[in-house]
Image (cartoon, rainbow, N blue to C red; front, side, top):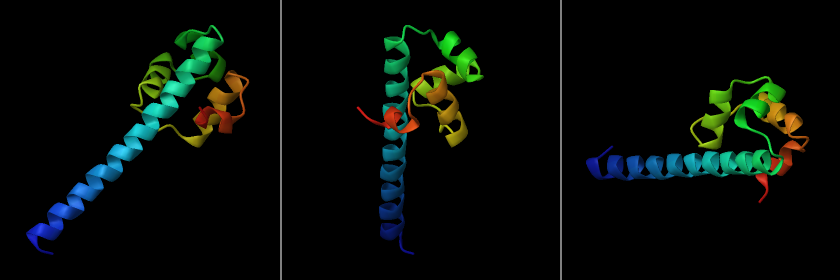
Length: 88
């Protein structure tokens, strides 16, 4: 693999990772909006979902790649269908 090919590969990988990060931010913003709309604090949502408050904050800031099981816990705690957390 030549230097030019390596550079292109790394740039594509960086763009792919940026897209993934953006998806986490969008999901986190949605969780935050729903939580606030329901008048819940991060602490209250964390307690209802049986998760740590700092973990909720990290999700809302797009810093954590959340697992399916934790998506389900948050959706249940918010009385939401999990898929609706991915909609605008």
